[in-house]
Length: 329
Image 1 (spheres, rainbow, N blue to C red):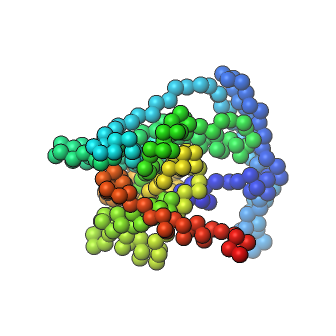
Image 2: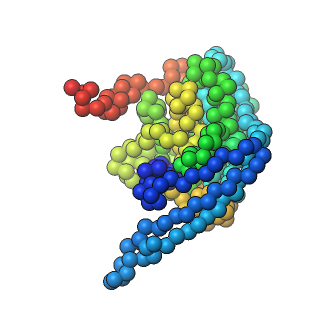
Image 3: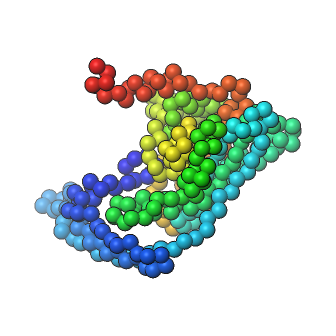
């Protein structure tokens, strides 16, 4: 289990099933048929003399159509007043497997609220120093389909709306984008989590000190973060499970990923609904407001501060920690 999502690697697949399930890639417009026979590993049963259902098998048939479809990325641009060719990007995907109340609509709702807040500021005469771009990505979940399929040795190109856009604009993005701030599932439950490239750690901590914790009126997000973890634990964005991946790993853009809660039980199921959110995820929608505060303030600092709030001394220190014993000499 890594980050917000579970992932079974090829090594575990081979250990469990003895070999990789395989399938043949079909031509465009035809149907792909995939037959899997999964042999379950015997489970441990607490009762004396019992070992679960060892040796059971499940055969599953997957039928999928391969076709070409048009996708649509949507952008809203607030042009900068002094450095209009430097961009701060805020992004969330809007396609879902089912109802998608958590994934991705909690993030989409927060992005729209940030747009509303920025619009109110613009009516009062505000204009950012650098250009802000709000990005609504399409077809992110198709990237997840390709990721899962790669485990099954199906030769499908891994793509999503953000990936296609980055590939088409790679040179400009690599030289002009200040940072990319991603929110996929804004709220999955309690607990604030953040991932970032190291030069943005200090900014993230400072912003967390300014936003009220949604689960405690007397504390900020930073206060609760410290009490819960005893230390500020900012994760590294090594995964490929959201739209920060192409910006960071293709274009080398400093990136942040934010969310409340992790590993929620209705992920990618029909139970990922408004009813689940109002009963379990965020009944009063206060965590949504908190994510909007952190996300929006991060963007304001990156767009308005005269000197970009990057800490490359910290970045160097963290990179040193990842050197091998041989390199450390």
